[in-house]
Length: 316
Image 1 (cartoon, helix red, strand yellow):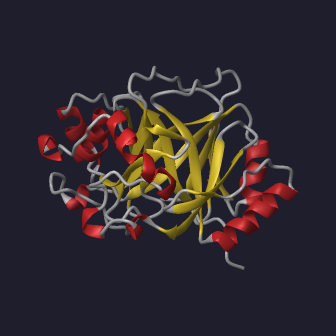
Image 2 (cartoon, rainbow, N blue to C red; image 1 turned 90 degrees about the vertical axis):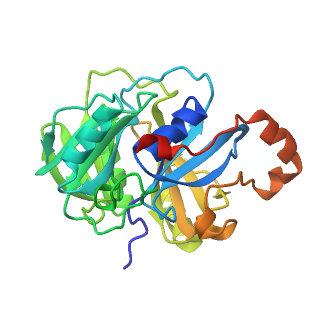
């Protein structure tokens, strides 16, 4: 039987200054801005989508940039680090590149046999780059980062929790994840155990709960093929006591949401229809795209949004 969940779809964070947000993820990291729209639940705030050439599921990091937002804090009950996948010989390049822009980078670490570095964005969002030879996805580059060193998409995400058992039960019994291994208090799960589907649970019984604001993850979304598989997983979750929302139309995918036992907001998002439904593939992210229900308020919405632009050429 085909699994209903096939990995990570996207990860969404809260950010601060919208221009700095675009500068970091397109300029420094080299991701493509594939969609520039609004937060459907807060129309006066942007929603940026950064990913590969087409914003394929498993590559898209999205942000809600609230100008002037205070910094959040890392803690339990949240995704504390988002890990991106790079080639096995690309770590030295990224250590040098990040240092060039004054970004503090950890020493090279080894985890489950793979090397990685940790750093934070301008809002203190936790990021990792994991070097590996298991990822054949093409990266994206605006031309200022060599294609061989470009980010391929997600590697995985770290959930910081006070206990793992109930969350492990959710992942392995209802979401098609399998236990992969353990290193200390870090427990790893995956659908196939490859970049793009890895979820780590780090157990910290004494840490304070995280405070959500700029620089923290709002939610993590998991992939499902279509609305049929989404309704199937919704039914499974509801039958097992999870409080799941109705299906919400996010234009580029359909979504359902629920809290996992440790407090992290989970989403199940469909692979269909994708980001090219309202823009040509060659021009993704160039215009502010609004859902139909917001078009009548376009003038007011655009007037309240801070103008932003791509400046990746400043980050060669």
